[in-house]
Every structure is written in structure tokens, then in C-alpha cells.
Length: 334
Image (cartoon, rainbow, N blue to C red):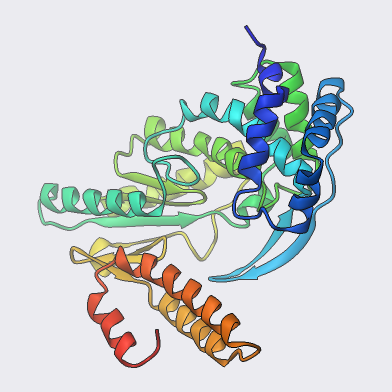
């Protein structure tokens, strides 16, 4: 039987990790360089990991502006192979401990599944409340990835992992960025879920909340008692501060009637309908306008426009947006 770390550094696992890491990026220079001497590079990685001479490389930083400005940190390709190799082995161990209603970066979950679950909870509450009234406590965590405490994270990983060599590799990856963990690493997605799994258990086992949904650091609790949700908010704030060294976002922790509509993961759920978020629609239309004004070549315009429309179509198809998309199409906006 192979030990846990042997499974991480096994050549077959490293090759599988390489294939996963290059997905949708196979023609980038760094990926082509690694693949040109693939066997040699994978053997070198295996040797460094087995001898524990592996050192994590520096990050390339860039900014993405969508709903808000985010700094993304991209690790060198060889390090991304190591991230995949590690997650291939340890993610199933942690996955078994995650609650059902955690939806970010997990197989079979995602934004659509989270929104469907929200709709189910709203429907249930509407029919169980004496007056039909229901409320939503909607929160997110201030600067979540940057605020993750390395010592707390390492202690949480050690709850499930005993192999000292695997722990060494986790520590190397965690220490590669400070403060917090970088948006962009595959390991960061797993570590972020491990970290807030503590919150999930607090909400379910201590607060005994049934109607709870979390997608990374955005989470909701639904209920019929507004005062009770206020108490939940206070207790969650204390738990996050004392146990995880995190803070609720001061402007994004609010309680309101579900009838007002719940803006969650790009959609607004209201009156039994699934609507598109207005700001997202406006942002898409501005992007399409810039693409159409880009005249370096007809091929470039076509390529960008087709890609943007495909993304829009996937987003809009999940919502009750037929009339909107027809109107935008008639107006030539899409």
C-alpha cells in the first residue's frame, strides 16, 4: 500500500496533474516549454519532491476588473503541476467532511446548483411561515483570501492529514504567499473551503440553521424570525473573529425580506423568478461595445464577439431572460 505522499509524487499522478494544469492553456509559452521536455521535467519534479528540495517559485501578478477589482497571482507552470498533484490526493479526504450546501469549487456543485437550492429554500419557507414572511441574512467576508491566517489554516489541515511529508508540501505552498493565500492557485480553492468548513459546522451544529448556503465567502441564512437572524449575525461575527481571525464585510452583512429579492451569484431570485443582475447585464453590454469598436482585424472582432456572446448565452439561459435577450438582439446589442 502506498503512503499518502508516495501517491502525491508518483510519476503517474504528476503526469495526470500536468494534463489537468495545461487544460485550456496548452499553447502558452510556459506550457509549451514544459511539455517540450515533458518526461525530463516530470522526473525532475518527482526527484525534488521526494528529496524535499522542491521550492515554490514566485508569482506573476495581474489585475482583473469584473464586479470588483481583484489581484490574481499566477504561479509558474511547474508549481501548478505540483498543486494539481497535491489536490488529486488530498481533496477527496477533505471532500468527505464538507457539508452538502457548500457550492464553490466542488464537483457536482457550482453557481447554478446553489441558486436552485436557494429557490427551494424560499419556496419551503413561504409555505411553512404562519404569515408567509421570510427573511434573508446575506453576508460575505472582508478581503477573504488576503485575510486567511497561515497558522489557523495549517492547524485545520492537520486535523485530517497526518503524513508529515504531505504536511511539509502544504506548508511550502502556504508559505509561498503572504499575507493570506493567492487567488489563482488550485490549492487556494481547496484551502479556502477547508478554512470556512469551520463556519459551516458552526452554523449547522451550533446555530442549528437548516436554510444555509455558502459559495466561497458569500453565504446566506434564511428564516422566518428577523430577530433570530440578527442574533445569528452577531454570533457568526464573534466566531469568525475569535476562531478564524476573519471579519464580516461591514457593508455586506444585511437582513432583509426575501420578497425584496435575493441577489446571489449573479442572479436575483424574486417572486418565483430567476432574474439577471442589472449590473452584470450593463457590464456585458459595455464589453460588447468595446469589442465592436476594436478594429485591428475582422477576425479579431469576430473571435472576441463570438466568445463574449457564448458566455452571455450560457449566463442568460439559466435565468428568466428570454424577452430581455430578444430585445437586446433586435437592438443589435448582442
